[in-house]
Length: 296
Image 1 (cartoon, rainbow, N blue to C red):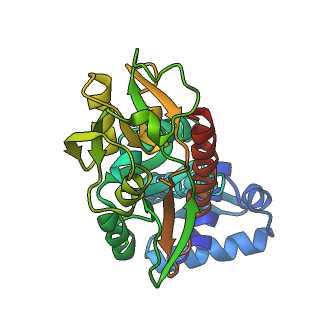
Image 2: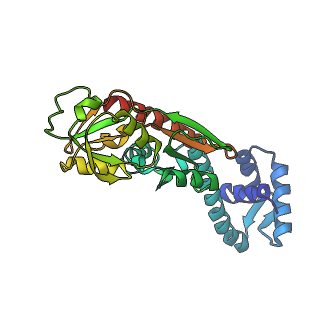
Image 3: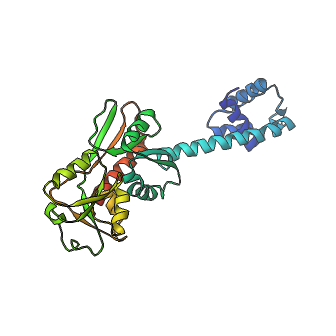
């Protein structure tokens, strides 16, 4: 038994005759007759009563047609899904990201991306950068976003540069300045972030000659921004986290000299991306670029 035999049987049942079925299938009438006879043989059922050029379905044929129709409905759904996948309207996205993105910019953009893709299933895993790398390596995520720089065999890594910014509580004395420099932070209570990281080292280097106090520490820029909004101090954070707090009690200003706070997008060399994932990556990179410009 094969699909072509089933198609011929279904066409005869739907059209009522061999000739009409042949027209429906785009083949000859003898070919339809042969396929139907082969289907009867393979199924072990007598499906039609033949009287000259007239055929009448048997009760077995009527019963069998119901199951065939259910199968063809399933095939139709498969065909529809395949078309949706080709159009990037269906599929899946499995994304791992460091908290600076997973808590704000990433889900905000993902929501917009999915508006016109109701059949896409998406999962976002928020985790520290080293676990992002492991998630992508293990195939738990198709691609990920981690703190840069990153060099590791077996990965394709694309940097997404972004300058750090200063997060100030609304009404702060420095709010009127368009750019903040290290000397401007003298005497301020600084909320320190990401102790022991390259980003923190860059901040400490930039402020090496400035007298300030650090009484609050947190590993997360998002948490630092919450503290800033509550007036607990000021902080130098990545632009992506800070952007989520504009108009929420935080004022964002550029910092000079530039402190790189960018991230990297990473994916496995061994697993090619789907067109859907590639489209997301490209669109999200453009979104982050615009976000960084807006926050400056």
